[in-house]
Image 1 (cartoon, rainbow, N blue to C red):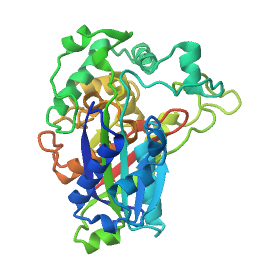
Image 2: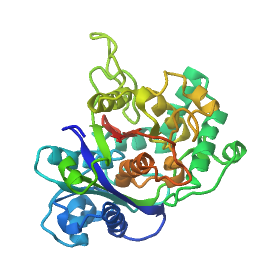
Image 3: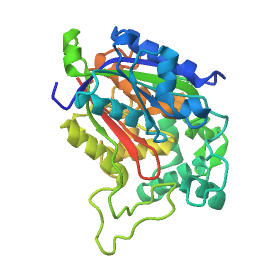
Length: 397
């Protein structure tokens, strides 16, 4: 293990679904599962980082302290992170930074959510400087609407078809059959997807992920702690990217409503989303060619194809070719979303990025029963938090 790495000793999840219970209950379940997986006592944990959930009142706003109290006060330091769908990865980065700085040795990172039915909308109130509020108020642009704009862009630029998007759902649904934590565990066909209701053309209901309750937790430690406990070969976090765009940001990243002009400076070397994965690769000292498995942000089927390219797992406009050739399914060159992805889980926002880390940890350990990517040694995640931030985590073994 290098001096820039931390060890993942334990991971745990609460099944996704609509359970109607407080988010704290889900988080405690996942946290205890992670502690048990690691074989680490709660009293050894010296840092708790919570992924904030904005829909669940004061307890959600101070999630680190909320989970620490629910697990039983042990004197641990606490922190809380919020970054929309990138929340879990940024919370994990906080834990990693304190460990690498020598300020912590054993950190527990927890994300949990209880969500409303339907799509996620901005909080109530008039906020004319909030792009999220503005897109709903001025454009009527709900999440499915801007997913559809991304999908239409792929169709116009690269010749993607509705059948391609449906095939992403078919693949992920098949992967999710073997995942005990997935909410939807049912195989679907292309005809099922195309026969489901059109939500926002060209996307159908089965192209778009649901909102869910759920939780995930990751226990990370210093490499020295792992070695003392006989786990020198533990899965490692080799890089985490939380970069922001660089000027000029010339590609429209919804729900932002405008882009920067490149007139004075020229085009940037990378788009914002491409820079997220690039920074993670650079920090981890690996390349896209080294990646064996990826867990990416498939809020819609078309977005999965975008992320395959943004992570440089293929060139621009080539994701459909990989999909059609079966290269992104289990047994293919680069399996994407072997967990089933958000297509099978739905959104539980503070937990999503942590759930990806859980899946990759199981994959790299060889413990992803029924959905194992054989010989996986390097995995990468991707999430977008909107408004100029996202995340990518590289795990190695």
